[in-house]
Image (cartoon, rainbow, N blue to C red; front, side, top):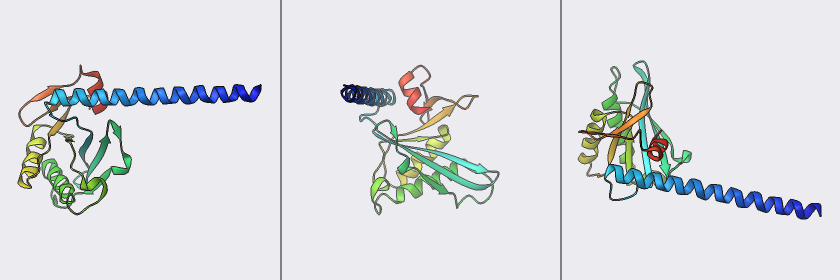
Length: 180
């Protein structure tokens, strides 16, 4: 009767929800695979950290770190760093360097996400940011692929960059959606 119809409707809804979840997971996996190919990485970046510097004038410099695990944002792993070493003005490079150095200091003495080395680091910035962070990581003997996210005039990511070249992503729909 009525209860049997409700049970069937519940089964149908649960099946649809499960299919939707698998579809999203497959799309995320494909985007990560395409990203690794585009960037010439030997490994699929399942753990990505992305950084941005924010300020209010020349005060209150902060670096934000977001985390993406297997193509999904992991808000529990998000962090912010109050920038302490940049006292005069807004030096984005020095701020980014401090944030990444402080983050990497925790590799040995932490548990959870801070004890884990990311597969890929993305920076809100261009070639100068990438060069600065790569240098800081190399000084600590840490090897992680680092790419900048180059924005267009509308503040949308149009390319990823190394310290030497840009890699367009605008036509790579899955990658663009993941990065954006």
